[in-house]
Image 1 (cartoon, helix red, strand yellow):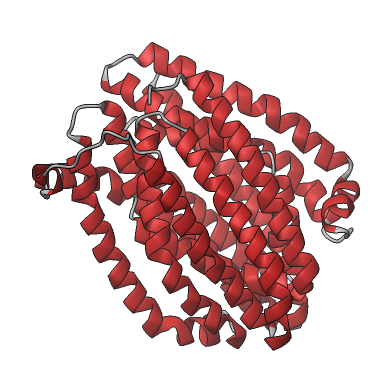
Image 2 (cartoon, rainbow, N blue to C red):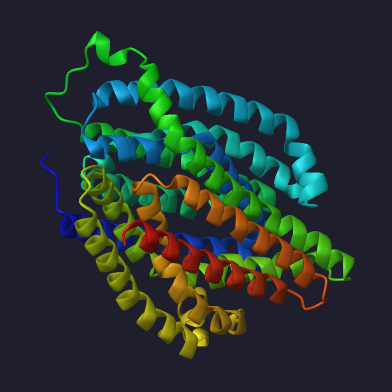
Length: 430
């Protein structure tokens, strides 16, 4: 399959992102209607743990693989088969650790015994998620975006069907059983995604014995990219993981009831934030298309061209983000009622809408840093941003202002990370 241009790649990813975002919203709507605010709250309580474990298990290998393939200077098949065993070993180690620590995490950290089964269910999904991500990154490096889009859309359709059929069956057995089932639907959806990606491999593809041989040089170069990338994602995910723990501990200390905390956290994480970040599929598409373009341009020292593409990505992101944020700021009740059949969370949404304009351009900036081999700059941004977010969340939550501590902490983090990444990219491409 021939390589697509930046614009064509972006258009394909935007269309796919739109479809998956719509499907994702439908999945959230179905879940909220079938499980209620408390069910969504329990699911969102476990989701940060899921995100953290995915970040650890992937170990930044997809980003490294995509960048190295885009540079087009290696035996790509041998590169792929050199990284797969590393991914497998990491997954086995992490899964073993999670199984041992799951009760402590659920009972002592999340303060929610119903979270135990969903956490254990995550372990089954992790190897499949890692494998599909590595396969997607291979196509990203080749600037072939259609396989990624097709696999994502099919994955979400299968999840939606399973959720519609399964939640009514399992909800009668308890909320924790229903949430566990929702997590386990990823097994079937990820398997279908992997099969679709294999379908898009070249029909005349041949794998020789030498392609299967482990290459230390390739692995070392990939790990040089993946380790800072993993550390960055791990720290960000760890901050996200700490979020419900800090909230539940601080707000419980202030006298708030557990049902209030779970329900309000579910409203913000399950209703408000997904709706605010709905247009982010545009910027995610731009970021994904941008990474191989910038990787190749900077490896060939074509800095003027790289700068032009980064500016183009930022402008497109703003053209999408500003009108979307304006609409959500002016009519939060309308959109919440339209999509979730609720007015809860309107005040949170009105406050966060202007901040999310910066969030939309943060993704292309971060992708540009990764593409230029500046994963350490991304790591520094994430460390400082996570410290700001976590520290302010703890302090603000103890001021007895309910969930507004989370809203203010989130805003501070977005403002800092976006401006800091912008300064780093501008400095590199000046």
